[in-house]
Image (cartoon, helix red, strand yellow):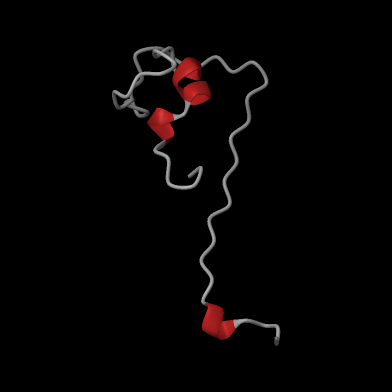
Length: 59
C-alpha cells in the first residue's frame, strides 16, 4: 500500500492508532493498544497487477 510503504509507517495511520506519528515500531492491528476513533478517516487501496504482454491496446 502507498507504493510499497508499510501501513504502520504512514503518519496518519499511526496517529489513528495512538502511536508516535514518525515512529517506526510495528502496530498490532489485531489488538491495538488504543482502539481507533476515526474522525472522518477513510482508507482505500487499489492493488493491481498488469502484464504488459497482455495489453489491450496497440502502439
